Length: 187
Image (tube, rainbow, N blue to C red; front, side, top):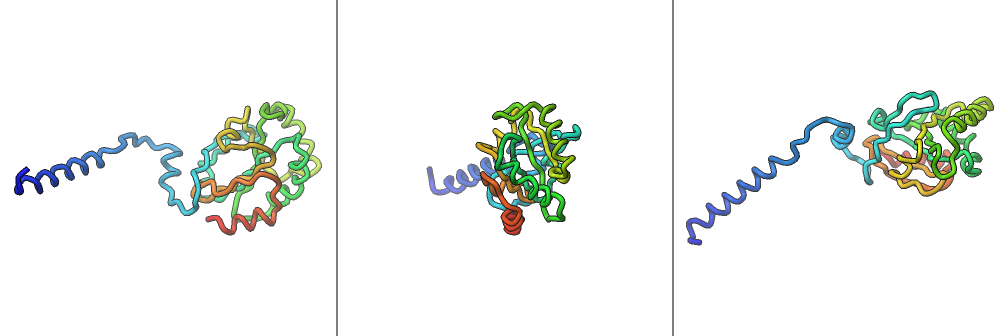
């Protein structure tokens, strides 16, 4: 290549690269993933899977609807003695005014959990005793979301930042003090 044509070739190549880069992904249909990606990320970690689950009354609760809020999620099971031992403390936490939302998820018909109907009936007994009065329980039928979150045992705590980032996953029982102090470091 002669001296005069070399700069023109480089400029032409750079121009083509810029045009290709501008073409990018043409799928601009808005969805929850796009909305989550548009939020300013302030925490370190992967984006939390955007679950959509029903509570015990049949109301749909989605992680996308909680965008902008910090969320504490406790995965647990009715057969788990460690989970049950922490229910009173969790009920207290859920009834307090915190800068994070407290929800729990149970997976009927997955890893030994009873059916949705049987679990709902059993949990109503806990609410009557005031043990679970403040606790929101979402039903992950068959453990679809448990698998996406990588839940390996019960209980497991998930700490999700206001930006939708799954900041921390902690197996085992977490006291209210640990939960609130963990959220102090999460935006």
